[in-house]
Amino acid sequence: MNIIDIRWRAYRLPFLHSFNTAHGVLTAREGIIVQVNTDQGITGTGEIAPLPAFAGGSLADALELLPALAARLHHKTLRESRWDILLAAEKASTKAASTLCGLEIALLDALGKAEKCAISTLLSPAGFTPRSAVPVNAVISARDTQAAIAAALNAKQNGYRCIKLKVGADLSRPPPIYRPLEKSPTSPYVQAEIERIAAVRDAIGPAMHLRLDANEAWQLEEAIAILSACVPYDIQYVEQPLQAHDLAGMRALRQAVPIPIAVDESLHSLASAQLVLDSAAADILIIKPQLAGGLRAGQQIIQAALERGMDSVITGAIEAGIGLVAALHLAAASPTVTLECGLATLDLLIDDLLIDELPIRDGFLAVPTGPGLGVTLDRDALDTYRLGGLA
Image (cartoon, rainbow, N blue to C red; front, side):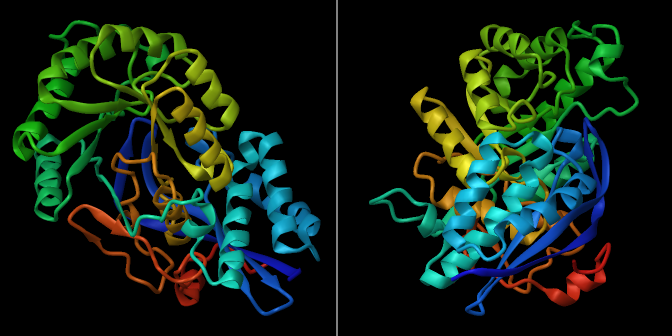
């Protein structure tokens, strides 16, 4: 089965409500839907969703890379093409990661359809039956404490067992490298962060998991002040509390507080994962396939973490449905990924570009059972939110 055509279309999806992170306020998500067509009439669909704020390249980078990559795969078999993509991913810069990820998703979707099995089956190790559902966390970005409490209670009512609370999103403050230290537990900012975290924990009770995501917002001294005060609130882990390059600071933070430390922005390839592991900078690796270079790259990072006795968590990049479902298949195929994954983000966007419904029940996201991705692209929605014509 040979590839005879590769086409793509860019999209722009507004958020239903502004999404606050320490990197800024997100109002829309841009990406590319890519389709691989074969000489046997099978089409595979993938998604390219770079995150420039995470040093993950840009939409312009992806559109520049696609023609040459598409030409390279033309007339090759699906398996040959995926091998080419995997080799390219090992050598790629962060600017190319999402492009390679999207192409790999499309190739796996087509391959799964050809072999009449799900992508999770293609990715699973020998002897492991992919999980039918994956536990996921709710995401709360509301900056106002009362709004955060309301969102947390709504998540609890809807059956979630884990909440990820965005912290450090006071956008009136300059970035860490440009502001004075606020290490005193009584400073207004530090105290407000602690009080907001405490209020959310009090609202949801002791049974739910509560994790924090600082998106690089803190300096070491204020991270120590905040997290030391939050020990009584049973924090599952804190994600990227310091700047991505500050692995020495992350290691010092691990030694200073008992709350587990996770890396996200620090992780964008197998090489970066090895650097984090060698630096003893984290307890948990957060893996975004879009930024890691694809699903196979994600598996390599999971294995590297496992060899050091560390946990991994699979998350999306707030992409549309195609990319998120691909990450869901990776999580379902990974027996050592047992913590809640960050895959409950489709309802943040005005549309997920899927015909299928992906309900979350009791905190679990069901894995589509059809061949390949197991979902169908909503072409009408893609037309509605397109940025340009199909290449």
